[in-house]
Length: 512
Image (cartoon, rainbow, N blue to C red; front, side, top):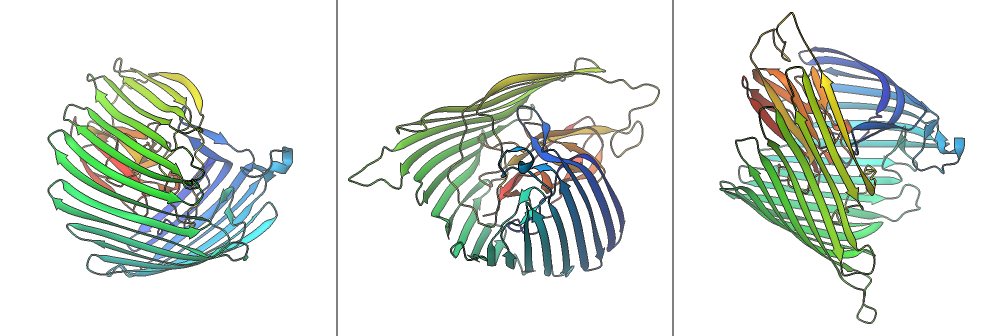
């Protein structure tokens, strides 16, 4: 995901995989293969894998030689249940094929570089190709990137759709200084087949640090391609004796949809006693754009309330939970209240026994505030169960004897601490998890390149025993739902102290 607009997704499979790495100085070689049933991870009602049937075989390799890198991947599937084909027996199953190749060169001193990638795919009898290239260069606090691309109709990677029937170019500019962050992006498109109109997408945002703990900013996005519309936002964020507060105003107008305005108030409480609580309250006004003076349609109002928190009650008991509720009133359609709530408890009963439980309830579907996305982004379909509730419990026994416990990355008997945290979808980009922001379930978090764990339904993860000292974590972006992304190759550095808990929240953002 060097540029999150142009992304090749990875197929998630229930099966087996192997990765071989040979890393030495500026030279490296990685070879991998996997085989299994493709599918999707679901976070609710519990963390689980939902298969699509059939099988996918894939192999890939990547090599680096000083400033040069090259990569290739080949994948083949058989009898996979398609999300888009009619559900009529074997007619709903596809046997796709795909191949990908890429070459890149980067200047290690200046940070400038370029990359060229090509892909061919065949799915449901439709053959397609894709080609994109981008170059980036940096100055003092400045980063610029230009891309060109061409995707034909029906482009896919195994069972995942990619941007298709688009050709054009994009340019992005970012400036980062001690008190300023500025970003601007412009993209231009035409249809390869001529079946769709030409268009463009543009966005810009700015952030200004006014003083210690106080910042303000805003931005806008506009699109004229298929869905025509514009959106804008502005915010003020400040630190106070109770935590961090933020007030944000959003407005959007979508052709054939709704004009919307929203005021959101967020506050996050953090204490040293193991208690964290984030709250969010939003007021929205929704007005159909098709309304006129002669034929007025009713205006709707919505109120959204969100809570997200965790509390350590004793040395052996902790609870965590979240609540999102949205009530819509004033219109003739889509009125009512939608709720998504969950509560979990962890109890270390004794040295060998532990208990975990979770309770969840969903009613209705909570929709997000209208947002404009680039046509190059193909969002993930996040499945929801609009009316569902239940609970899960786990009783675990584990015993060790005969030798001292070995913490991750250390020797037997070494001092150790605990790392816990969450991966979440940072909708407002402020770097902290607010009450209305969802956790990212089933995302792989890797510690020191050797040890891994997956986030649960809350987006939470933990490494229970880690040797004291310096450590590095990364989040594998393949498991994040598009269009959410992290900075390329972002590493989180942290220090673990003996008999202490280190808390880390990692926010994924939508590139504006």
